[in-house]
Length: 71
Image 1 (tube, rainbow, N blue to C red):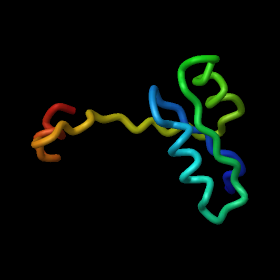
Image 2 (image 1 turned 30 degrees about the vertical axis):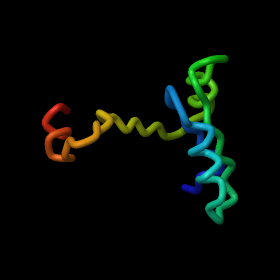
Image 3 (image 1 turned 90 degrees about the vertical axis):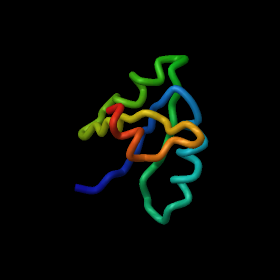
Image 4 (image 1 turned 90 degrees about the horizontal axis):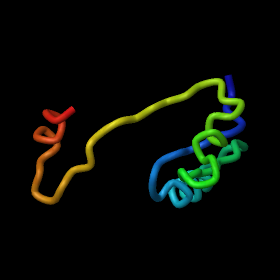
């Protein structure tokens, strides 16, 4: 299966991440969406696969192993 479109959704920074990913040599169209204006619905429209990465952002001075204990 080839991906022809990649939709990203989060509460912040998604359009910037999409712009970074769009520089990868692939024919896939990459778009980033935010909550306003039905961003989640636009991201999921026509999706064949949905990946939901979840986590807790690390705070300064906190090690990754300490953050993983929160999950």
